[in-house]
Image 1 (cartoon, rainbow, N blue to C red):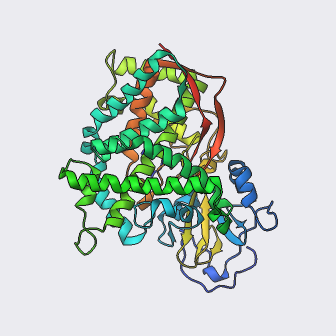
Image 2 (cartoon, rainbow, N blue to C red):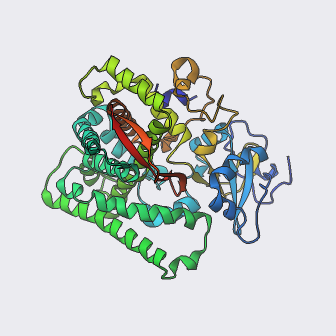
Length: 474
């Protein structure tokens, strides 16, 4: 079972703004004549729903479907629209009426810039995806196998002393080293992965607050937290520049993504600019550290919470691989292991909130969405919705078996997004996570230690506050 298997392709008061085009596959009228979505309850003066989003964002977003398929939210003076159904989130991702933009991306702009694949739109985004795609083709991922295997088994070897494992630190270390060593080869990269991880930890903890509580000038006050944030941001961008400068100085052209970027051309056939190269390197480092690292943490947390699933993975590896170490060549045969990875991403997604902006007056779910309006939706809420999943709160990887996966509604499981926003690193991530799951479950059982803190850490990504486990050799 793979992620692709679960995402097949295939009235109120009218607003007064001018009409436009429609994004819905079944439009019910021109946008100007359509109803206004209902306002979600619980807004407070000045902050609107920002207070709820700051205090309990997962609970708040999960409950929004009870108010409608599309609802209005207030963040201070700003109005947002929330989509709450799989059908509508899929329509947003596929419609040209919506672009990647809004407070989420504005909070990330200082980190990701405006010219990387994560934040660009239109022709630039399509060209960037086409440029990056060769680095994620099956043959390229096969070539990364030795690096992936070396990093996974080196981590497992570090755990043999019996000391408690800081899974937070280990997960981000493995993610950073694997992504940067595969996609940006070079000793100069290896030397910087720990600095990358440290800077991003500080940055992501501050960015979500800046999104839901847009306090503007207060974030420029030289308080300790603001100074730490600014230092981390400057250091992270300095690291990206150092990697680019040293690769150019080396004269080396290994078969990796950085080589592709340095040779890339723009729409006119000219070399892309240094700022775009910088922003693309930043995007690689961010995705490789924060999203992949959070997914690694979630997977090891599942092994501690559901030891029977780790036992089933061990048995599958024994049956399909035997006694030798697992390699990436074994990954396609490990179907239950892949299902455990998918179910982990369903219940504990790293990317739990996404935001878009209406480029034109348009329609969504029978409601008018004015041009310039921001639309938010939560993969966390969509993937836990009891309307889409039987026993929605249970960890059940067998739901992804071929005979059952068809019962999941279209777009109810999209951890890597859909359409032209689909993450180009999807196959890369699935291979790393499946290899990790198979090798780890074959070697250890896990117990949570007394000083572990599995409360949700709500930032731009979702993960435990600090996950501490004891690795017990099998």
